[in-house]
Length: 295
Image (cartoon, rainbow, N blue to C red):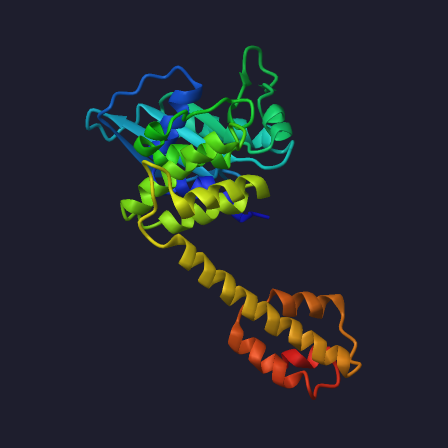
């Protein structure tokens, strides 16, 4: 199942394909001119047989105003070991090579060290001299952005590096991440809030506390112009009220001796629709079974 953690770095790449070129420069000795056109293209690889393979993201780099790519790059997020990828990744790359007719590269973002170590292993195809070693971004890669000034210059790269856990999430690393997020927020980037939420959702409790403190108080150079504290307090209060109402539905049913299955309990507690919870709350006082809440 595709999760928010899987999609987060890919969404940033879709919003700004330049990030893929920055990642490629970081892990592979590839020279790219400054005046290139970088664009996302179709992520689907369809064969003559009725089987379609879809990569997470594919980017073309075009030089000198040409419409033909000089480099093509596949970017994948991999959160778990999946041996099936050792068969589909070579297919992605060779299919792209046949379509783009230029040098092609595979970058795999692996936030977990065990997955990163697995993904770095060369994939032997069987044909002599034909093996694929994915370019992995993750633990063990080393920091891609080392200063807050660099983060301000390449904020999306800094955010992707944080999501991929390329370095320990200590205070220095969180200051770099904060500088990237503050730069986008203060520039009015349309997805700045979403990127902040993506990063916070993927951090450990300790790292999240550090980043929340930095976002709230700022640093000497980088401060959020919008009131992050009020925005998140409002979201927290709303979620707290909704969860309290969901618990009230279950308490009324329990007080009346109505049996509540695990499925019903999970459905009620997962609901974030206040109007629907109001209806369930009224029904809880009269229904004969918990399932009747939903009818």
